[in-house]
Image 1 (tube, rainbow, N blue to C red):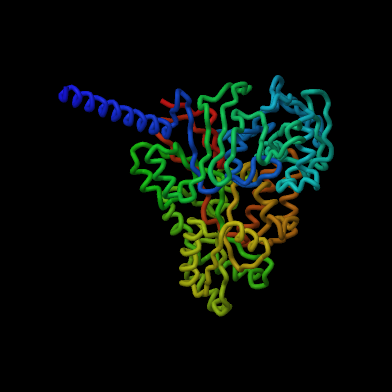
Image 2 (cartoon, rainbow, N blue to C red):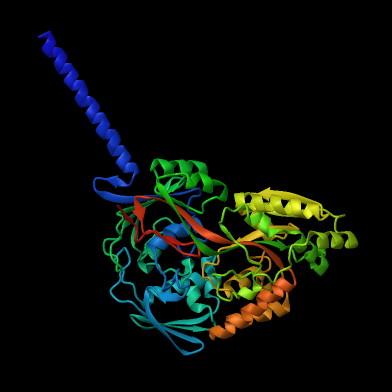
Length: 513
């Protein structure tokens, strides 16, 4: 009897161990995106979303979510860099001020509201209404009138011929919202679009959860569940990626590339992008208005020394408009002031530029800090006195906007990949004190940029942009540090991640082995 009892106890323990092992296996499967046959994928981000309404949000983290929940009339083809219809079926220009857009039929928002011309008119009217205080209301600035012709045709008239209009309509913030939902709830917290994924929940500081849209007009996505998980430390996010607890991350830090390349369970994906990182002067300050001072600074900067630290994630070009941006011409690649520290030293000594200290403002982000430290050393070698002031991102942007600096580093994602949409927000005098943090004001430059925006002849537009680019390089308005890459690290079990040069990515076509 004792022997039988012992056998029973041993057998029971074995059953318990098997059950625990099965439980652990289930938890592991859950982390790897497999739960009860449900296919899921988790993206780790170091920052939380700000909100989920394309009309009111204006940050890249929120855009990662809204790009899967909503859609625009047009989209940028990441391979050809051409603007193509998305919710639009086609368009015509009966004259240079009129855009007649035919919409796709038989599409509904997630709440069942029909997608039609009224929804487009509602979205654009709200986006440009001053009462809305939309951060990107300027996208609608060229519009004069919006008229519904019929259920699936809308006519938009502009105040002047506006060449980048289709690119504007492909912008994240020009996505179409459900009028029904917008009138009864806060889309920043309860989003409703036409996209491949539907909103499930948002736990601030933790995660956003989305589910595949079973009725998506483009076909149901393979992944049933998509989660954006907040992991404040990038090193922790990489560890979670290695452990299979998350499936991908983006914007790979250059200092972590070697670690990521040594991980056997991920693939690193990268594509030459539209993002630019540049040093700029505060052009409102008298010293910075001196062409010799700007020439001395530009001559002292060895951009190759910075790019060599990027582990292959930077493109070297003097051009303000990068290789993936409309208006770029390869002749501008080497048209900036070349590195010549002896020439810089001579200008500093001749003009006494080393007597007054320079406040070099930077954001406390890894690549910005790296740029600041390298440039500080190079300017010091040329005889300048440079003091770095670092601050967190939001405060940095406000400080730069207020002009409380001498030199600073700025970046621009170029979401529309259009040169006009790089020059106008960042350097046109209309935007000094707002998006023009360089405080640059030049009537000749303004005329060229205005001309590039006020014609629908694309060859003419490119010519004006090339001239504006050359003017900036001749006057050392800014010093390009590098043009960026779009990067992601994806678990090898998954494939089909769409990575676009403008920094957007999509999981709609992602599959798992």
